[in-house]
Each structure stands twice: as C-alpha cells, then as structure tokens.
Length: 511
Image (spheres, rainbow, N blue to C red):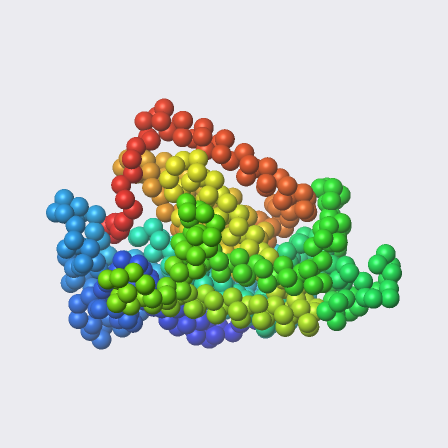
C-alpha cells in the first residue's frame, strides 16, 4: 500500500515530530527556565550552533554544556545541601533528547507500516472493509502519531517534575474532537467476523453492543412501542448505517443486560443525548479550569471563590487593589475548546448519523475516563491523608478517553499499575523513595493497549469484560466502593514494613 520512497518522507516527518516533542518538553514544563532545544521559546542553554539544528546527532554537541542548569532561579534559592536535587546538564544528558528524536523518526514509518499492512487490526484484514478506505488508514496514522507524541511529552515532563501541563492534554482533547468530528471513522476499529470475512466497524460508547439507531422518544403521532423504522428527533432516519452491525449478539455475559434495555433513559439520539454530550464538556471545563474549590466557608462562598480564582477580577482590598490580576491564558483556551465542542455537538446532533454517534461517544467516553480517575484520586487521598494521584493524571485520562474511548481508558488504568509496581518496589527498597510519577506508566499502558489493540480488545476483553454491558458499570462501582478498604490495608502493611515515612516535597531530579 505504501511505496518504499514514502517511508523516507515519513522518516523525515518523524524527525521533525521528535524535534517538536523536545521543544515542548522544555517549553511546557513548569519549572524549566532555560532550554537546550534550538526550537525553544525560552532562554537558550548556551550558544546555538548550526550543528545543533541537526536531528538526533546535533544533541552530541550539548556535552559542552555540562554543569549548566535548566533551573537557575531554583538553584539560587535553595540551600547548599539541597542543590544536588536540582537537574544539571551533564555529559550524558544529550542521550534522552537524542533518543526521543530517533524514536519518533523511526517510529512514524514503522507505525505506518504496522497500520497499512493490517497487522494492527489483525486477521481478516481487508481495506475494502474499512469505512473510508485508504483515507481512514492515513487518518489513523496521523492522529495516533500526534497523540503518541503528546503522551511522550506528558510522560517525560511528569518524570522530571511530577506535573503534566494542561497544554498537552487540552491540545490532545481538541485534536481528537476535530479529527473525529470531521472523520468519524478515525475512531478505533471494532472487527466483526463472519467466518473468514471481517467487517470493520468503529468503536463507540456502547461497544461491543449496538448503538441505538433512533431516538427513544417517538415523533408526535406515532406509537412509542412501535419497533418499525421511524425518524429520530434530530432528523436522522433509523435506516442510517444499515450496512454496519448495530447490535452484535455475543454469547456469554451479553445475555445479562444490554444497552438497548436502558436506552429509554440514555436516549443517545434524542434531546437527552444532546444534553448529556454538552454536559460532559461543561464537566471537563469545570475540572480543567484553574479554580480554587473549598467548602470551608459554605456553598455560597465556595462558588464565589471558584469564580474569582478563575477570572481574577480586580482586588478591592486597600493596598492590594493596585496589583494587576489577569485571567490565565489557559483559562480562555479551555473555555474556547469547551464552547467549540458544544457547538460541534449541536451540529452533529442535527445531522445525526455516524457523525453524531462519534461525537456523542467521544464526549461521554472523555467524561467517564476523567470522572473515574478523579474519584479514585479523591478516595485515595482521603484514605491515605495525602495526594495519591496527581490531577495531571486526571487530565491525561480525559485526553485518552476522548481520543480512544472509555473502554480503552479503563484498560489503560488497569494495566498501568501492573507496569509500575516493579519499578515502585525497586525504588522503595533501594532508594527509599515512595513518591512515583504515575503519568509515564499511564502512557506506557496506553502504548501497549494501542499497539496491541487486536489482541487486547478482540481476544482478551471484548466479550469477557465489556460484554457485560451496563452491568460492568455496576461492577466498577462496587470495586470503587471497596477501594478504601484495600488502601487501608496497604497503609497498615507499609507501616508494618517500616515504609510509611514522611515524603520529601516533590521537585525536579537529576537526569
């Protein structure tokens, strides 16, 4: 499908992507003041020679910057005994940015081959079975390459500073929204087999069960119990997408309860579905906006404090009124993305069909992924008495849920602790460190699930886990309610082993 000379172009694009990833790592980090990247917008670390513009190999010349720091203000403000924890540029520091660019340069053509060859989707691959054909494959490649680059930025910044900037996650959410709105087939594939013939459908919020074809509420003058073909409230005919598999009947747990049995309440193609999708974006904006929320002074005061912490009006207090208080630029970006998303929801709902299915699924999946992570964060913090999960991990899961679906996000959240446990035990036993940046492991789990999508989804979890339909949400709720008990036992075990000690403040570390 892809000629050999096209891979050379993809290699060049991958190197450019790697250079942009390195630029963003140092430009979007919270504490970094100086950047070694020649593309960076911050103060340069040393002189920028022509050699440093060469991808991968140009980083070799930065060995001469050994002893310089990316954090001059932080280095000057700490005590002499704490300066060892401040990141200094060493003769080996060039390895990481060089590997980033090399990975992106080689990874993009390999990703294109992996997708175009059909190895990603699995057996039964046929380009004719893909909605949109070749264009969809290229959209997959481009969208997933950029999203993987954003996740790489988030992972490395979180590894250095234990923070994930909103620039990364908000960009990913907006990119996923635009891509899926304009090309609904950009969603992850869901393969249905009939013998040796495969029909490649797109994932949606009810997968692997069917997405309701019409609005539940009947058109005035019709019988709500009539199951014949009728027109939905948003003007979409029930016969739309008739060639796609709407309700695959899988054996096993599918017989317990299906989404179609609760569609009366959800009504995804009706007005309730529109309000649900818009509410998901309001929920996302409320959590992402930099607001101060506290109930210490009552509900009325809490609402007022949240408002002024976001929009920062001028002070009225004498002596402080002269200080200029500006709304953060990120606030306007978040509000703009939410407003555009709500507008696109209305447009997609009016048009109906596959586009509304895609936008509705993206909105609800994003909210479910973020809400679940946020609840885990609140419960874990309440039981352990300290922050157990950073809010950057919540925003990262918002992005993963929007781009890949809540099913994908749930698999990522389940696999990430398994990947992290070995490293966490090693650091606890060798260095006595208990603080762990969870973002890199979420990203690692996302890469595993994405590249192994055919196996992870179709072979391991499609029927056995997600075949339960709405009952799966009940199971997850039970697990969430039992989580405090497990955390209490964990705290007791750590105290018994002598590992429950006060943690130092999180900061940057030597690289």
